[in-house]
Image (cartoon, rainbow, N blue to C red; front, top):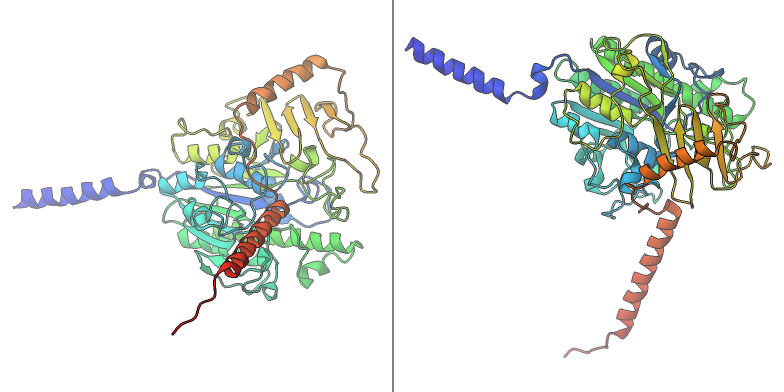
Length: 497
């Protein structure tokens, strides 16, 4: 009997152990927190610039972690940049080079289902995954976060949102006014939006700490328009005379306070030391292009231009990695780093085999820890097919670029040195001040060959910009209504007896 009982108990233990998720035997796998700002100017946080905006929490992460001096995103504006980061693949590979329009009835308007987001791989490996904030990758049910690898979602599905609860209206045609969502249901929203997002992110961490590894994607819409800030935060910046700049500064400040809330939740739950935190922006801060002449409140110094441009101001972003248990402190890293690297780094730290995945990032850990001495990337690539022939390639030494659309300065004067193609020496001229196109033909040919090789595997862009898409849909509705009216007109009258 004793032998039978022991055998029975062993059978239960062994079968239970076999059913445990992979993370049970991998206690050292770190938590992952990705904090993404929206339209943040390069010079508008303390660790990258000389700014009067207070960002002590973000700056502390930089001070105690790794600052990537050459950190880039894959696109100069929101949706495509986010899709590149979350898939770990250049968005040109799957034809997503425009923003996704919020269109919940359109089964095609979203990040293609052919692509697997890296949180889904983490989810399958035993991570609890969550997102708070901006989605912007599709409103139809099959595109929504809960069907793309996230266990938890609090935020909004469109490309932006108003910041105050009073600016919400059920049935409003503008997605910025729609109620927030929590796991597919209308969500409580009773405070300034950035604070609400930060609070829900901190709560997710607290609720999941100690149970299993977790991945939290904090997708702020700050400091993206509309320019909304609390009076309390604006009081700190009374010295800023430009009203838009004052509000923007308060919005960045609020986001930094939110980062502090998230860090505190990690510390209080005992998870801080074993959590890898990435902080970056989805693109550069706004710049007054010809079609948005008054968007001048962000500061991308020392770089030229900003959001929408492929010059450094549009794609070179503040970028931090912080992980007390696994990364050195107070290090500045100069190699080429991309938002693509977040996926690869996270998955390999979770002991996930990435050999069959078509990831294009690199695991940054051995580079930062000095085991690998070269740059993570030989070259980074951009393509912007909304307009004709806008492209760029950046190596450690040079950048070859065709900006492709009219360029102006803040006072409306033509931005010099960008007519047609440009070549910049990024060692001697990291701020792209002197165009040396035509002076080093061999370098241009080399970079062109690299870009052409990369571009061979890309798809043509399949998405319309929002204003074109909405115009097309409106015309379709009008056509449908005219057909219905004609159908009604063609009906023969009848009588009954």
